[in-house]
Structure formats: structure tokens, C-alpha cells
Amino acid sequence: EVQVVESGGGLVQPGGSLRLSCAASGFTFSSYAMSWVRQAAGKGLEWVSVISGTAGNTFYADSVKGRFTISRDNSKNTVSLLMNSLRAEDTAVYYCAKILSSDWYAGFDYWGQGSLVTVSS
Amino acid sequence: QSVLTQPPSASGTPGQGVPISCSGSSSNIENNYVYWYQQLPGTAPKLLIYKNNQRPSGVPDRFSGSKSGTSASLAISGLRSEDEADYYCAAWDDSLSGYVFGTGTKVTVL
Image (cartoon, rainbow over all chains, first blue to last red; front, side, top):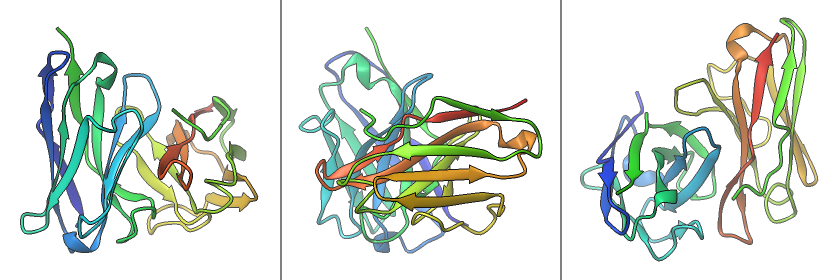
């Protein structure tokens, strides 16, 4: 059974940093791209970042480019999102999602339960 | 920022059919696959349709997807109370080098 489980969310002050982690199981992790998607309270889905299976390709939404870094450890079946220079508008539930294939543009098939990040003083 | 446009709401009585449109451009829908997601209240999104019109195992055949040019559609037939949810379309955007989601459609079963 495919599972993705996020951790690391919490309350952080504006300008601060936070690292989200996502543990995956039930599939050959290195063969699939992974992504982060966020959703502010009462709002729609917003894509954040994606990383290919080999970690050779990464892409970011303009709203987080230069502040967020996605990475993965295929030996531990984990993907991380390091978030720096956080702003109030980054407050959202962050979902980790598995991509349908090794191609980073192939769409998301499995989602985690989400991790809440709150940026506030 | 959503670049795929959906109607904010749709509704129907049990048993009826409900269409949901998703309008994009040549850089996303026209040249890439479209995906549809269902988000029940308080839960994570779930894949409903992939590669324009394919259903994952376990998704009822009441849900169907189609694409033509720069637009896509999700059709729900035989509406049921458990279909009350938010529905999102998504596609890769070649110009943005990233995914774009639709604005979301809230389906209400009357």
C-alpha cells in the first residue's frame, strides 16, 4: 500500500525557516518524482515544487522560488522542503504528493494527509 | 496563482448529471495531460482522472474526463450525496515550468 506521511509543520515567525519532511513507502521511491502542494485555509490548491526521481531536476512556483528548496534522499525514501524567509502568505496546509511516474510533469496520484505551517508573530 | 478557470459551483439532484469545465491555454491543457482531483471536506485531494480520461482503479465509472483544445471537462453522472466535494483540474504548464491548478468547483447535491 502506497503511503506518504508529512511531518515538521508548526508555528514560525515571519522571516524564519522551517523544514518539512515526507516519508514514503509502498513503492520503489527512486522511480517516481515527488512534489509539494499547499492549500491556504478556505482556498484552492497551489503547487509549490517538484523533484524528479533522481533529484536531477527540480522546479518551483514563482511564489517560492529562491526561498524554498526541495530535496530527496532515495536511501531513506524521504523528500524534504526547506522553507526560508517565510511570509504570512506561506501559511497553509502543505501536502506531499507522489507523481504518477518518473516524469515530473505526470500528475499526482497519492497525497499525504498534510502538515500545517503557520507563519505569524 | 490559478491559470486554469473553473466555475465556482455546480449542483444537481441525486441521479442527475453534472458537468465541470476547465479552461486553460496552449501552454498547459492543449499540450499536456489533464488531471482531476476530488477533495472531500477536511481531507486530502484524491486522484479522480489522469491523462485526460483515465480512471484509477476504484474510481466509479460515473466519473469521466475529456479534453478538446485548450479546455477539459469532468462529467459526473448519477450524482450521489457522497459526491459533494471540491473538484480541481490540473496540468503541467510548459511556459511556467510548473503545475497549474484550476480555481476549483464546489459540487452540491440538492
